[in-house]
Image (cartoon, rainbow, N blue to C red):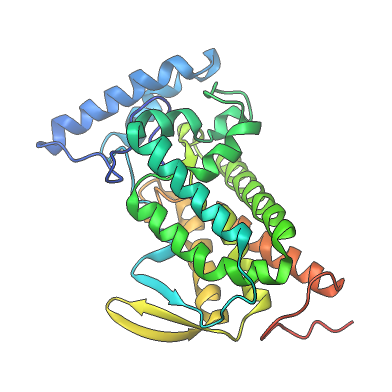
Length: 307
């Protein structure tokens, strides 16, 4: 899940970011002025003074930030070596739906699609008016992506780890779990933004499937900790235990999320790290509860939870 440009501003090109202009000094100010000017019509009266803060925060940065580095910065999973016992209907349907939205809804007019269907944290506390009510946009935003690298990275993680989680949960329960995880992830990011972020950060739209996928990763961490994930590190394939791969991934989200609270220039400035943290914790807790209650079986490498 990533945070894109602010309200009403074209956040991305088809390649995933707005190209830098020729001169970084004067043109950065042009981007800032455009940002503040276009954001204003969608703000409530009380929020209009935020225009100056918006311009200051984003004045020297690209309007579209690096998509979802929290999943796959230089470390790319290739396979977990665990074939699904049955065809993962729900997981495949989710992947197809995400690609369909990307190809047929976003690509023809990416800027308009992202501006219209993203989730805006400021709509929750009423400090701005988004194109859609937040009760709808949290769902639509889960199927949006900011570029090819964004959607390909997310769908790779979902394809590798989702099939086995669906095996354990069953298709219907897995689908419900996926959407619940996405909702909790979005609420976590929104809470951190509204409580600890700036007024400007609350107006930055959030989009992407990675909050829900983080919940899937949390479930996989509980169910298959001893599986070996073949991972491409730079150019070299390496087998890493799932508990280490996913545990390290979670710690990275937690550390980057906390750094992001204190600096807009933190490495995760364009990534909704707390959505990943919230989704992963939700996935771990729900899966532990289901295993303890006997509603799903403890699969290969699952921990002995006892009584």
